[in-house]
Image: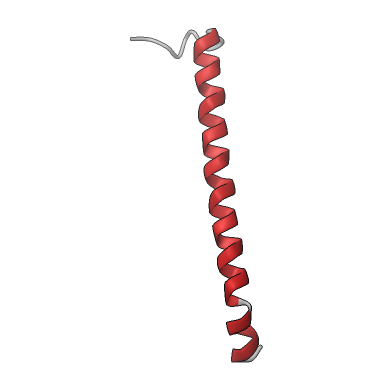
Length: 50
């Protein structure tokens, strides 16, 4: 690889990094929503101890 192809592929790398971060944040949000639903429906009553 020379510098030209590397500089041309830089925007594509930034887009792929941004897409990975968005997918990672979406995954975390989905996991948090699932855990909140589990707490709401009482599927894990042993975890909820106050």
